[in-house]
Length: 101
Image 1 (cartoon, rainbow, N blue to C red):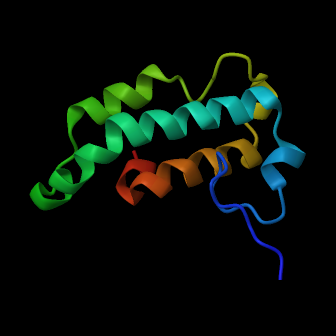
Image 2: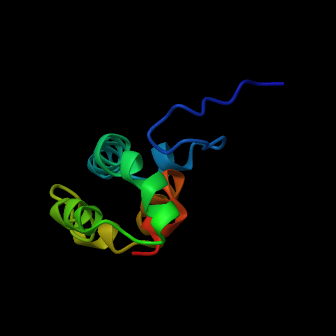
């Protein structure tokens, strides 16, 4: 049985859909999102769950990334279901409530 790399930008992507269907700029955007979530958002979420609240800094952090129109990603790709699906997947890997913002 082949080993599936789960440490990619996308996480578990056994069929390599991200590398086949997303531009390098889109993958770079998602990688940056993953890094920001790990460093700035993820550490806040346990306390947020306990208090049933969302820290305002989470929204500010995500808004500053301009994920709806990321730099270098063509508008048609940024609007695609493939990019938005992977974007939401990366968000949800940190915390499901973050993906619903």
